[in-house]
Amino acid sequence: MSRQRTLLWITLLLAVAFVGWKLYDNKKRLAAETELSKIIRAHVPVEVTTPAREAVSATLEADGIFLPAKEMFVISETQGRVLSVNKNKGDWFDEGELIAKIDDELLRAELEVTQANLAKLRTDRERLGRLIEGEAAPKNKAEDLDLAIQAAEAREKVLKKQIANTSIRAPMSGVMGFRIIERGSVIGPGIQIAQMTNLERLYLMVKVTERDILGVQKGQPVEVRVDILPGVALQGRVTNVGLRADNTFNYDVEIEVPNPKGNPLRGGMHAKAKFNSATRHEGLTLPRRAIAGSLQDPKVYVIVQDSLAALRPVSLGATLGDRVEVIQGLSESDQVVLTGQINLVDGARVEVVKIHLAGE
Image (cartoon, rainbow, N blue to C red; front, side, top):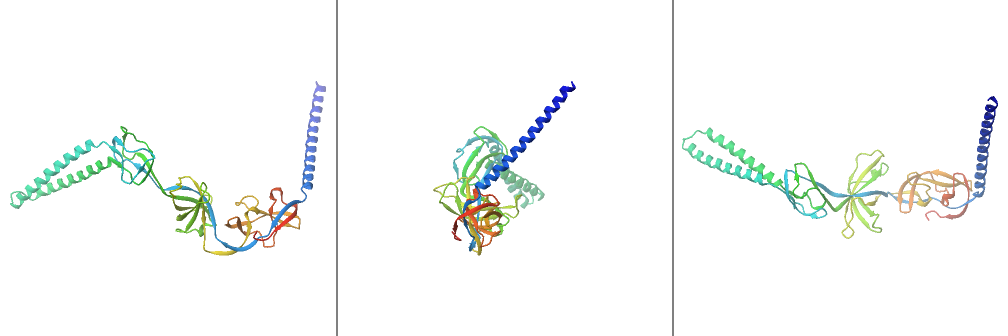
């Protein structure tokens, strides 16, 4: 038994030693392959450029989605059985047009009783007035009749309002997005029965960073380009600027845009807003393709010691079409890699095959 246990331990030790040797050998081979890769890519061919100093206007671009400028739920203010429903969802309604009619038979019967009672009270008041003038009746009797007439008139107004509410009308002009009542159904006060949407004007809702929000003003003109309509520019106007940032330190900006009749847009479509400012200043600019990574975390490769590519973080400012403003991290004399970044790592050796002039 002791001999078998000894053999088992020896076998386990040999297995562990073999695994350790194998891992070491793999690591050594991988390191060699890495060094070989560095040798193979010893001089990566790149094209470079230098930052250009030019006049920069405070241009800001932001993506957003369209929302209807006017949208409203239709709420029932009465209760009863639906006698009729006009039109269907997707149909256009003018403001005040009848959507549905609710049964008002009992209300009209009660109104007739109230009006008959009111007529009798007014007749009695006229007779009593003549008796009071002839001193044949006390004056306090007139006060009781006056109060009864006022109560009857108030009840008449309430009934007329309730009867008017049985005709459910469109609160605004627009298209009925959906409808949840049918002829014969029973509804009550406060029940949502339909939704109206007007797309004649749209709101483009965009997010603007805290760095740019001070350059956005209410009433400012904005150029809007819709993703599904390339080449079409719409003119919008800022109608509201958020007063408080969200959890990502962005501010909501609302832009009103007329809906083009030839190419009507819909809520939820994507578009890009371009804010232009009259203020201009001088700054350093680079082609956007020189940026390695994203514009949210921008970096560039700069040539140092004649043949090494150093990855350097930069801070960006305004966007100028296919160029961006660099506000921190570069000088005019820096050589920045324009093409070939995909094959580079920090510290890689490069061979400059072409130098683009500043501003190209």
